[in-house]
Length: 126
Image (cartoon, rainbow, N blue to C red; front, side, top):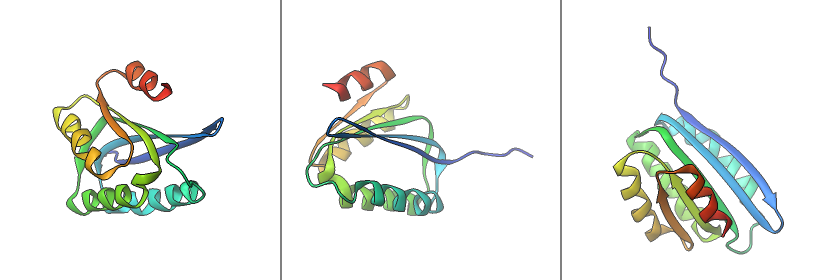
């Protein structure tokens, strides 16, 4: 029997007045994954009054979303999109680059795709 990992791990740090969020997506994300992560993000971002959150999404082990999970992801982006200054998507699949381009439509800040971790991190620090 093969066990398939899936889900999101999250890290949240404050660096000066900036909030830095790191997300790692693994496998095919489900609605249940978002039921766990959404309240954590909501709580962490509750006091944000201006767009100063920088996000690094590691999608190198991500396989995609179930349909309902994709909807959950869109709702999360619409709810918190104004709070994000920059979102760097680090991945290794062409569809992730397309996702970054579409993400710009729903965020007030910048969204950019990288296939190199160091480049993504350096861009967030600018």
